[in-house]
Length: 220
Image 1 (cartoon, one colour):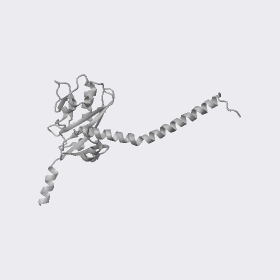
Image 2 (tube, one colour):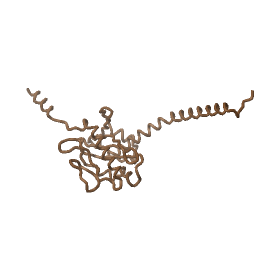
Image 3 (cartoon, rainbow, N blue to C red):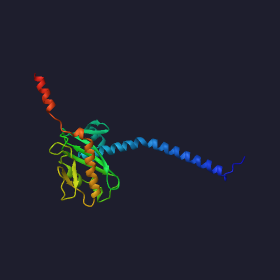
Image 4 (cartoon, one colour):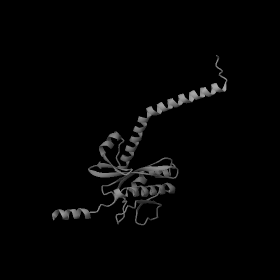
């Protein structure tokens, strides 16, 4: 029996077989590339954390440098805090995620052992405008955060405001927004406020009252 290659049935069966074969090949390719993709995602995360720690990894292996410096991960619900030892001092690194003008923004915030003083930040973005909002990744903007405090005089977590030059935040320390990138700058400010609020339990000021009571009781 001669196969009628001009029939609709033949065309349908042929296309179905081709689609199945292509789908199988794509699935196999994706599966084979998955370990490499996951490794690249992990490496990018490690580089960003090292960036927040102001560590220059350009002359070495960033993964190895990360493993030496970052020695613990604390979990608070679905939140993580990375703990690093840098030149004998403890640093806490908090992941950040938020919304910019054209897409997602994120990064990492490194705090000193007091959980109040910003040691460094590293921001990233998906699609902010080059020369404007995209400047959040550049050092002049990031360096402004260094040494700022995220708590107020009462010990409450209030974050750091990102405002236009000349404007002032009540009860907050602040940095200058990027000129011409108001929405992205506001996105960074909101991202910091929201994310730090989610870590409020971790960042709260520890009271010494309980420790003093325990000490008194132990002396009785």
